[in-house]
Length: 350
Image 1 (cartoon, rainbow, N blue to C red):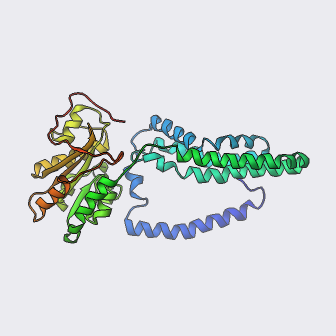
Image 2: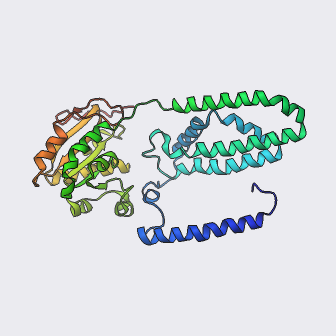
Image 3: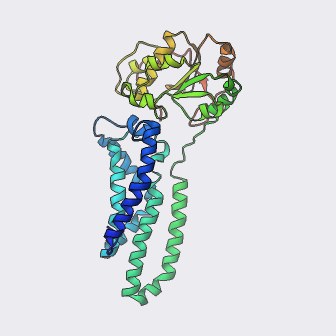
């Protein structure tokens, strides 16, 4: 679309490169993984169009690109610039809208949308370049007069953009609690113990344990079976030494919270909550030790279970329970809520 002449050779070369090189890669991954796409494509799909997610995605688009968006106005100054602007919109609009049918779970600090920023720098830079070239050819004297002011404006915009994006998300985030706990578990890694965790990042990485991602983002079996929910039969296959999941603040009802915390299972429409309920039910049925229920605030906990019938069980319970633990987001010192009452009304911590 962006090229005026010799489009057919360009289309042929583009198609051949992606058909040959991309086809080889696609064939390899299909053979190796057994599925056409990565796990998140299957685990994060939603059953209906979520217009609320579109609203969030559009807001993120504006938040990330706010200092640059005025440059899009130059795209209406000429037909050539508008063509460049259209190329940018062809990329940005579908990418923003796709989140209506893909879950935004785990989108911490809008990380799924980061790619829009460098793409927009390139595309809107192209819009500016086309506008500037048109101005130089049509009004060379005026263009010459604008050089210094435009350089100053570009430097100022660059500085504002850097400052803006450095301060866009000022909420603290800390993984020190999980990392410290994982390092205490690392001496047991050589014994081939298994953990099942929902926070499948720092804890498996720093402990070097064999790990199962309960949410299925890194587990093909979970992603393609039981509607993407971990099953007790799958857990029984591994009989994990540690089960860890996060009881998040934003749950739908007290009954769901109780089901995550030790009550009877209840139906849930939220996959993350359903996973937590299955993990809790499996741990209770198999007599796991509740090692800790760490949380810095009420209704937002990391829950740790340890299997009781292996040699290092007591030592691992101690490694989890008998040391300070810092919450994942704020880095605040946590409290063990094992003996705290379940709240009688829904609560939400932001």
